[in-house]
Amino acid sequence: MDNNDKILTDIWDLLNLTSDYLATGYLKDHSGLKISTDSLEKIAEEISVCTKCKLCESRTKVVPGTGAIKPSLMIIGEAPGADEDRTGLPFVGRAGQYMDKWMDAIGLERDKHIFLANIIKCRPPENRDPGSDEIAACLPYLERQINIIKPDIILSVGKIASQVLTGRNEGIGRLRGQVYKYEGTSLIPTYHPSGVLRNPEEYRKPVWEDLKQVKVYLDNKNSQ
Ligand code: SF4
Image 1: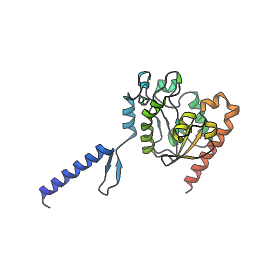
Image 2: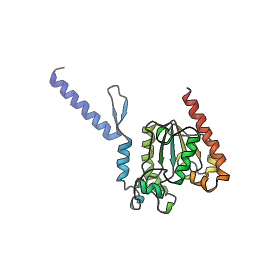
Image 3: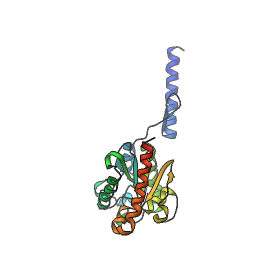
Image 4: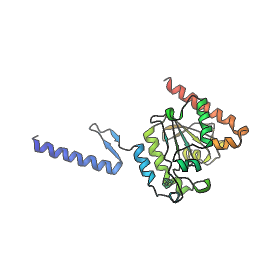
């Protein structure tokens, strides 16, 4: 192959790569392996200007999610509340601080071992439940985040997040106590910390059971 042929072949390869990327969002390396070009920063940028549902009209700040780059645990809640909407950070209110204590009890730290996110990235007014259209519009962001982060295990907190991720309609009291799979990742549902703060007598014990299950799972994984 002379020099001109080589240049033409390289241009042809480049055009194919570009076409693959535009069609799939992935690049393929020379061995044909898929290389994701998606990133948490790119997703956060898209969310920051997102107008895919009407929650964009009432939000103060978007709350894409934050935490460790390669976390053991990903915690997924329903949607930002007032404190999160004001700061742009997930789980920073009283419930979030309470959840830090849960994590402390199983030896995990927020920025070291955990990535925190919500199903919905903008606050629903008056903390109402998100509509199914809003969930459908926003869920692809979370799916992309999970695909990049690849946590060892997911803890869904509260009814809505747990229903969306398990694909089931039962209340959280019936959903919890089992391990599910979400996109190939193990998932444990539990109560939302704000619910536990409202009714500690009823919910503290089952939450502790769920957290112990998370710990056993991670301990087993680490010892493999
Ligand atoms: S809630 Fe999600 S889909 Fe709706 S505007 Fe915010 S980022 Fe976009």
